[in-house]
Image 1 (cartoon, helix red, strand yellow):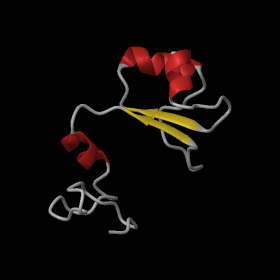
Image 2 (cartoon, one colour):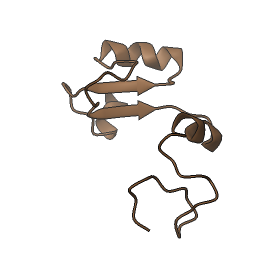
Image 3 (cartoon, rainbow, N blue to C red):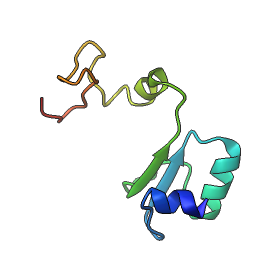
Length: 83
């Protein structure tokens, strides 16, 4: 797990959260100090596990523009992104 976190440039001591992780991974990350819920204080490091784009869109529905609105790259844009 340490090697993965190093590759992700994780720094120990950051306010960190892991969401939707497989149970085995979540357990390891909790030992490393990750929370499994977003607290009032904005996390400094977040790991989100999803299986497909639809899952991302469902989790972030409040922050994504409708799927029909895309940037020139063809990817959905978030509020505040410049096109």
